[in-house]
Image (cartoon, rainbow, N blue to C red; front, side, top):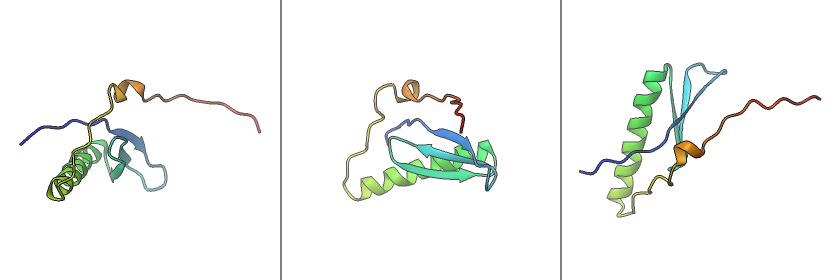
Length: 80
């Protein structure tokens, strides 16, 4: 078995509560009621996604170089 690591973006979900966890390199997302649950759900989502690819004989996507450093958040103010 091989080990894979992917950047996961955690965002609070103001409507449902908890956190949404998005894996940009794989184009998948999940959620959890707490940050810890969202982390666990992300691990399960990644694992399931990769297992599905392997079963179908598809290649495992690689994490783009330095993706974690490239993700930025900024507070942008506008006047309307």
